Length: 81
View 1 (cartoon, helix red, strand yellow):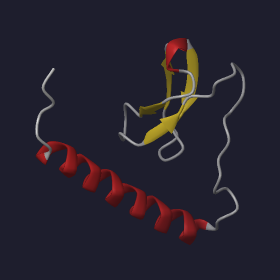
View 2 (spheres, helix red, strand yellow; view 1 turned 30 degrees about the vertical axis):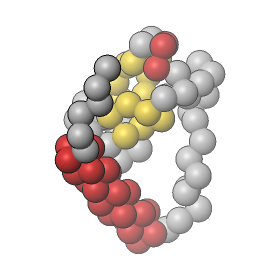
View 3 (cartoon, one colour; view 1 turned 90 degrees about the horizontal axis):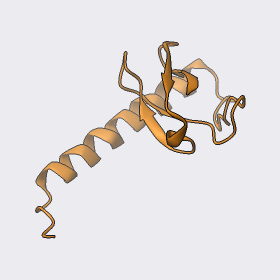
């Protein structure tokens, strides 16, 4: 198991090792968090250099993108297997 701390709300939770290198939703706020590929690493946060306003703007745009993708997925025709 790997311990993850949500970048948005600070909630800590554990995920199975097989999720290494993937994104998982926070169980508290549903923000997507990356699971470090190597145990013990905290992962790389690409936008730590932004000030609070920049972080907020980035978060808003990311949330809009996720909403648009969810809507697109909901409307997409089902795959035939």
